[in-house]
Picture 1: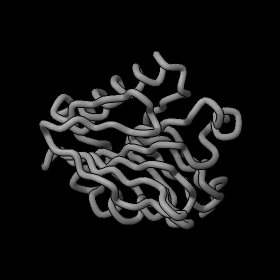
Picture 2: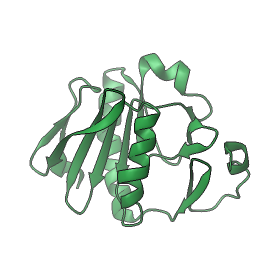
Picture 3: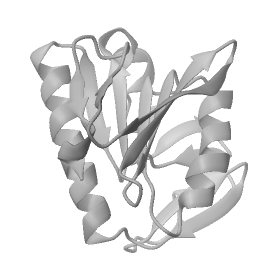
Length: 174
């Protein structure tokens, strides 16, 4: 399936994504998932806006990597210098940062398939948020691919070179 065909799908409460032309559907997320997304969005957005670093977006919003690969990250950030290049009616190209909150139905997809896509298309940093373990895994671009750099646990503070001065108490989002 191409993105043009994908755009013809009827509206429903499910999330649809394209992985190399394969349509994948996910039911709407749980209330807990959305609470975590909201808390992360509030903190990341506040920092980005206060420091004029760019823009933060939340799903559902198509992120078009190519005509056969279209994902809807939970949260994404695009730096100020890349906004004209990436932010159109949809997101066209790789965001600087993508954040996915795991759900029971998306664990494998987020850890494998999405990691591979984000790596292939040049996302600079990828956070995988695990509500069960109350952790955030950070992957960063190194030698052309996303590589695991650190796991932050409850009681620790996450910092990111993509967001200078940003500090997140991990336990505060759970």
